[in-house]
Length: 249
Ligand SMILES: C[S@@+](CC[C@H](N)C(=O)[O-])C[C@H]1O[C@@H](n2cnc3c(N)ncnc32)[C@H](O)[C@@H]1O
Image (cartoon, rainbow, N blue to C red; front, side, top):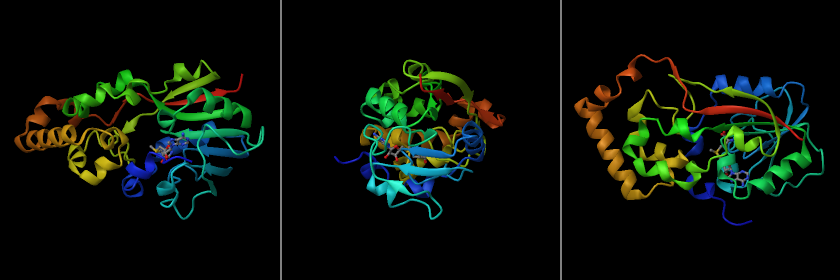
């Protein structure tokens, strides 16, 4: 297996990325009725504590080494090459992993081969582009991985999409994905935290340093609070994260 991207950018993952309970509940509801579930791109195991038997699949050794003590048994492999027999699972699941897959058609064929139901957290990039953080790191709007992120409509090309649910991001979101700290702007100044957000970890170091200094200056001067007054009152926000429930055709 070649070097997995998260072997480089995943080193602070367990420190900053935690289960968001509202997302965890939505995932559990969508998987109700399944007995054996494959968690693809499972990372450190944040969403695996479900009332079903879970097997995790994760290509990065650095991520596997950070898996939680209560996490499911894990197999090291990518979504494009599943080391399981046909219909080995009732369902597959994945949280914010699909945009990292290098060969989606091949991975989708593999998912459909091993299970009928597929439950994935993805994001709509059009919404994400409105996120205030991107004003400080404008170059990330053109990051090919962001522009080509797998949306619910892309999944509809390969599966029967039976439901798409909005995954709101609560003000006190306990996760650490790109928009999780939308109401805690100082979080984004921490270099270790930036490393746990692939959008910023992949960004050119000069761009990252410039954006970080601008954000710091605007927070210190009060310019940030003046520019985004709505942040002070919102209890939750929609940054385009979606739970897609799909079935094999
Ligand atoms: C943002 S992390 C999400 C981890 C976990 N699902 C969670 O929500 O905590 C993305 C994960 O996808 C994994 N990944 C990257 N490319 C992959 C591939 N081709 N097949 C399966 N997983 C992959 C990464 O190694 C990483 O662990």
